[in-house]
Length: 146
Image (cartoon, rainbow, N blue to C red; front, side):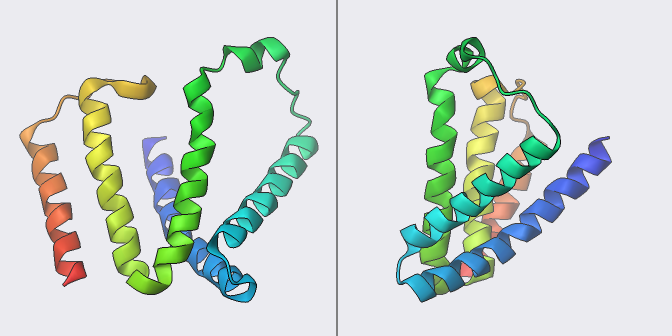
């Protein structure tokens, strides 16, 4: 199952490049990266509603909604910030540097989150191998940015 998850993650990562390109086209046509991001989320929301309806998923109860920690809802703001920022910076940085920096930021945050077991992730202490991997990745970003 881990292999399937890894392949799916790789495919979704590749899809991010395509998503940025789509959003850049919308941004150019509308003249606004935030409007392009809004369009992205409206289309995504519509698709999710259709999927939930097609699979006849039961809507959560009020108690289930209230059990969600307040901070967990901030994921939507981070998603919107990513889409709007990538839409704005994509034409300025190019796909490779944009995604390399995005992955670099994810790696730095991930090593901290894993080390301390934050936000519901299992604790995975930093070791030499992980640190070397992050340093190599950051070195790759430096080479890409040159």
